Structure formats: structure tokens, C-alpha cells
Image 1 (tube, rainbow, N blue to C red):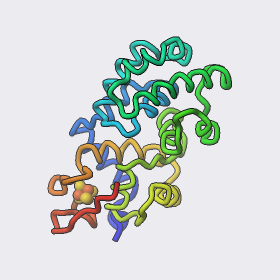
Image 2: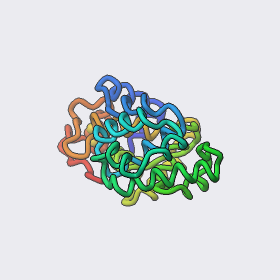
Image 3: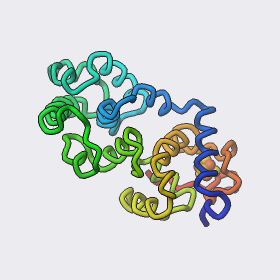
Image 4: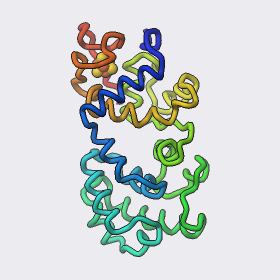
Length: 225
Ligand code: SF4
């Protein structure tokens, strides 16, 4: 059973977004610091395998010192490590940040490229990160599937997949084009505040009435992702 039998994508995203904003999802605070494609790229690089709160603090510290590839490259690797610690893999991320700045300057004249193919050639940027930048910084019809998106899409019954790549392909076929770039942000925010990985708040969920995984009806939600 899929929640789409009861709600349209637009209704679904609106209900989730409203509740996540009411609960002050950390990702919305995070987005306030991500005002340019360059900042979005740096933030997404820092965020992998790192708690949202930790990434937010690192981003705040780093953007006080560097908001362009040139300013980033002017910092030593050691300074970068100190600024971003304790994000996960901070040593390799510090090295990637300098390399990223160098490549942006040398290959793209200091701008951030806006195609998936080009973004995937950048150091430290994988498919999910590239899609986050395309959707959030360039407003493209990209769908970034992280653990929140993968888990919630499966719990809602809109997909039945075991790998994020499968989820991305299915969501591309299912979500209307104009809503695709809202999907990641909304599901991340909802996953941080309501449909959490462990102990989702099904009893307080605005879409719980129609959710096939709601624990309010005695079910155990899928812990995917
Ligand atoms: S009812 Fe529970 S499992 Fe379903 S979307 Fe809401 S919080 Fe997630």
C-alpha cells in the first residue's frame, strides 16, 4: 500500500514541511548558511557521515574564514582541519576542500559547475552530494537520496527498494518534475523531527492516518537507512 493512494505529492510535501518547520528541523537552520552554490558544495562535502549539529558548527566556523574558492585555498590544510573538526573524516575532508578549491579555480574559473557529470568529477563529491547541490543551489529537477529520503520513501510505501540508487530511479519516475527539487530538503527535515530512524513519532505524525508503516496501528516501521 502506498500513501499516494490518499495524498498527492504536493499535499504530502506540504504537510511534512509544515510540521518540520513547526518543530524547527536543524536542516532549515543549516540552509541559512548555504546561500551560494559554493557554500552548498562545501557544506555537502562536510556533511557526509556527520551529525547535522556537528556539520552546522563546522560550516559556521569555516564560512567566517572562507566564502570563495580563493579564500579556501589560502587556508592551509592544518587550518582547515582545525576549523572543521570534529566532522567525520575531517583529515581527508580538509585535503579534499583544498583540492576542490584548486579544481574550481583552475577548471571552472572559480564558479561551481551546474551539471551532474561535471560535479561528479570534483574531489569528495559523490552522486548524492552532486544532486543536493543541483537541487538546492541551482533549483534543478534533481533528487538527492540520502538515508532520510530512502527510509521515508520506503516507509510511505511509495517505493520498495533496498538501495538508494534504486530509490532515486523510482522517485524520478514518480515525482512530478516541478516538485523534485523540494523532495530532499523536505524529507530530511521531516526525518530529523518526526519520521526518525529509530522511534518515529507516528502518534503525532500529520500523515500518520494514511501511512502504511504507522506504529499507531501496531506496525513496526521499516528501519531502512
Ligand atoms: S506515521 Fe510514522 S512511519 Fe509513517 S511517516 Fe509518520 S512517523 Fe513515519
